[in-house]
Length: 385
Image (cartoon, rainbow, N blue to C red; front, side):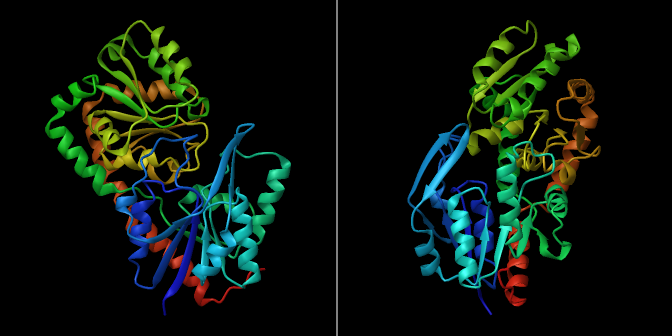
């Protein structure tokens, strides 16, 4: 029996397209994706990869604004879209938009199983006021089951007294093959690519939004404190953009020795070059529901220094392929950077371990996890509470 699945998510994100393509290939899944918007120009400058899409989808009409630091997104016709799609099961990626609540109400009226795709973690400092928390509890309490990317989100839901049998894991994934193949091609012509992007011979790499909560000032402080010999040999590259960029640039200019480069926002093809030529990837984030940049770096064979605040840390990073640090702990970050900069053999072994460890975290595995959750709910004939 074929299950008609409608998946509701915010935007056409490049890293989700391979997952949805794989989900559409699942033999018992008839997939239709409803995007609440095509992209989010207030946060990211991604090119929308429509040419890569191999699944049925639609983009709702929308209105978006940033209001007091919060992302407000209003949609039209979610109920009409659901009526036309006629789902057997709905998977919704979040609860923070009005369209999500409308979809939940639609599911309850039509006795359709409703699954929430949850990436929040206990350490996610984005949690809001008591009002928002009460709304979250209400939303979660009305869902039939849940899809999570890994252990941190699983434990987050367990803290809400959600039974284990209602939580399904779909390991968060990027297109590993794309990054691995790009890495091989770039490293085969390393000098040309390094010259093209004016990159140091050796460098630590950060990729992500340049915001205080991503730990970027911890990283530049740790770099400034590196042993002089290390700093003179190993640079620091930031790939990304954000509100902290100007302040970060001023801080970088005050560091007298070493090499710091702020490259700005990079599309996926360019970012793969930066991963391929780096020695170590560093994500000292203070809050991150997952951190898919860790997946990308590992698919490029890099050792990873990552804070425990990243949702991916519990699943992807250990002493075999990198170092875990506490968020905001500059001394731990400094120690890890000094250690890995001075240990070429260790970096090589960690990079190989990263590449091995990330293989199961592929679009096909993520799609299988979602499909298992959907089919289990469909076959159990769950009814919205």
